Amino acid sequence: MSSDLVDIKFRLYDGSDVGPFRYSSTSTVDMLKERVVSDWPKGKTIIPKAANEVKLISSGKILENDKTVGQCRIPFGELAGGVLVMHVVVQPSLAKTKTEKKIDKSPKKVVCSCSIL
Image (cartoon, rainbow, N blue to C red; front, side):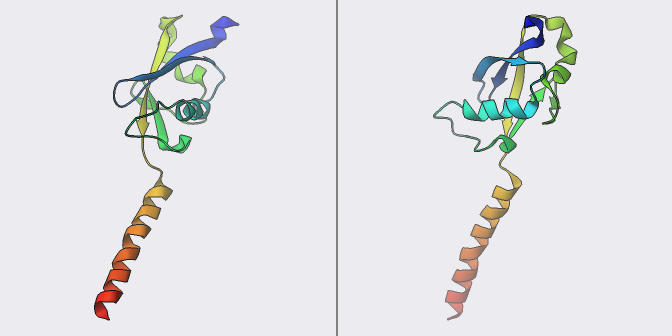
């Protein structure tokens, strides 16, 4: 049963780590992202608000949410008993970016109509 478990730590943008944590090889990448967000260290300048703002990279590839840990660690089969390191990239969600653009445009319209009056 212990061979079905994988130790994973997450390397953040500043070189610090979250983990390692032990996962079943059937855990999904989406589950890992949820854990990263919930255990994000306090005091960082970049803080993800949701799992969809986090990308996990392993062996130079962005991992898909529906893939399992077992599927992601195939190239690491020779590291039996080792700790996998996954890199974490935080990107604001598209919806958030669109909302910020709408907020930015609103004051311009108000300023424009005020200057016409």
